[in-house]
Image 1 (cartoon, rainbow, N blue to C red):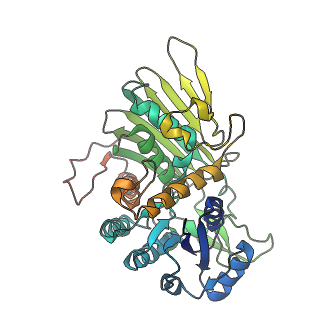
Image 2: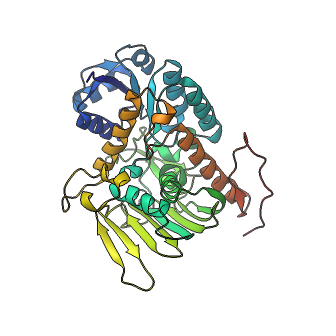
Image 3: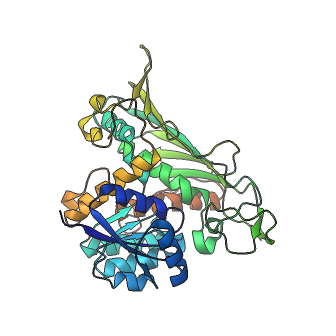
Length: 399
């Protein structure tokens, strides 16, 4: 099989995992990377074992050896890099969120629809075998009519007021912090697993740490500054804590809590779906177990076992029962789906069912934008509606 050539733009924290996932596929050549400067690209190329460093992303896009572009830049650069890659005829795999604003996401979605190439957003939790099992159970009616969809995504990496990241700067990360960063993952997962759509939200956002002591030098995401490094006080306007009520198009209700200042919670994503016949629950930190709840019989726990999974989920489990698979394996599964689609030319009919596209990225932006509007309006129900396709319904009353 001919190897596909990939280039990566933005070699920060998440770039390492893109490159690791691609290497595990075995049929993709990592051609090179581009960063904020040639020097930074060369440094990261050495660290990651990549042979070539480009002076700019434009030089990377001009290289005919690069057929696939991985965009792992900070949010404010997502639109610029992805749009240029689409216009250059390259397949694009972008980190989430799709862009820094709803308007930019819409522009990328429309450009991708016309480009005739594969376009992927890394909502990587879809790549877990038991997430696909949960999706199959719901699709087959095993839970009955859905009643309640709820969960959380809780972290503690911003608990200390001396922790700071570009994600907290609206000019770099966008208007939302916690919701845009991790709430986006939960909302995508809830819609993907249930097959339903969030149609209205009521959001309460809060900034628990309104002033932070940021390093004087520009910080990278998740990178701590030296203890005695010079610092500056920064006023934070984006949320680090959020609670949101949800309404789904199938009549189900829901709620989600998102926070990044909660001591002891490292990467605590949980999703539970309750139906009229049964319930299921999955936790990211225990990804090899799916809890199944019942009313008149004993609850059970389904362990990740390829022999026990639905056919649609079995391909996402690569090790025998009892051999744990986790975050990096799910990420690899998503990237494998992406390259399988790329080898089919990005034809819409050939897209793997679990693979999130720019359409899903735009859809997710609509949901997060509705949450921001709900809070800004003082706590009112806000419809999630695509202004291109529909006229939004009348908003609800104050909650």
